[in-house]
Length: 450
Ligand SMILES: Nc1ccn([C@@H]2O[C@H](COP(=O)(O)OP(=O)(O)OP(=O)(O)O)[C@@H](O)[C@H]2O)c(=O)n1
Ligand SMILES: O=P(O)(O)OC[C@@H](O)[C@@H](O)[C@@H](O)CO
Image (cartoon, rainbow, N blue to C red; front, top):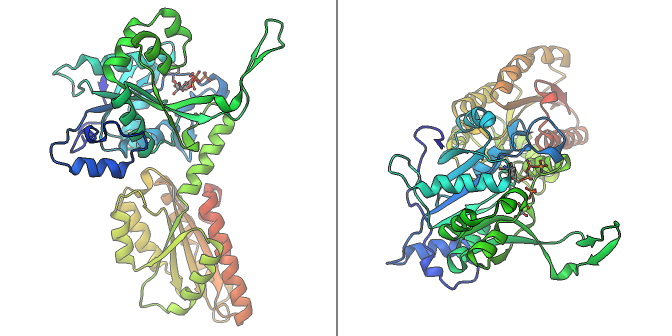
């Protein structure tokens, strides 16, 4: 067993106070938890997580095991770790990876600044990997930072979209019932074929559910189940809840989970995961402009942008406030910036913004989009001369790409008649909306004309 990045931060308070939720339906939510925590005499419980990540991803059909396949140039497993790290009351996250992938996993932990991660060697099967993770927690040895939790979450490393609410529900239910697991309605009907390949039984779909993850268990329940587990079950089983029932005689409480719990299995799942992630980081745009500049073109442009990005929060900021916002590391962080340069081609605003982004670690987890918008009077200076003065962006974009910052240029002729200007503003907004939503590195450094 190996601890992850040095100085791994440990949550201030290691576990949720579920004693106050005893008997509560799994509908408990994080807000209920925080209320319970406030109650005097409530007791925090220790919660850890085990993530099996030792598979080869055969069904994905690519050489790289799917947990290491990139989404927006970041390995899939890093999104799952981030999701669990957001939950401060999970005190340890044990990841089971194969020996040959230990180095890659250590690099991921280092590069994406993951914390509370411990690595164990995976087994030949998913159950064996999970068992290895549980063994690491069971040791409860003074020389490791791991201690035996009261409740353990088991979650596939290839299920990146797990939120605190469902984790709290399965943990609360496991505390009450000994075991709990997330379920989802079936999409297809389950049938049982006969030996000659014909339909034997068709299950009534409405009366059955798909077993998903996360699952949670009183540690002793699931650890004893794995200790008693037959080699056959360790080899061929796919359901931890079944082991708890069969070997620990514990009936799991089933918790209806949200739609995004699905497991990345086939290549299409990677594409789906990428589009969900892109959509989630495209919800906010920060328009940065020095207040000394002429506000009129910006106001018109903001209107056009709001029309094109109607489901997106658009905030305008002075450079200093933008810098303070960038330093925040909250879940609502903004990963999209539009820098307004009115009648200037020296990129003042953009340079300031890029410097602030380079000073921050905002682009470690997600690619940050920066669109440098330039309002020019083409009558005063021909476009060709302006383009020449804007070539700075090309070189700068190459450097920024290395920092996962995608820099694009956009030129708008401010000397046009009102109607043409409105059309350019609208076109510019459409271009920016597309750059944010697509996040394509193919266009970085390009100067687009609206
Ligand atoms: N020996 C194994 C096999 C699987 N897993 C993990 O269990 C999770 C769910 O398993 P699955 O989707 O089956 O992953 P793979 O076995 O990699 O996929 P495939 O069956 O397509 O090879 C994955 O995070 C996988 O890495 C594991 O830890 N150890
Ligand atoms: O590893 P496999 O893809 O074969 O199976 C994993 C799934 O069965 C499992 O994650 C859920 O069904 C919950 O147990």
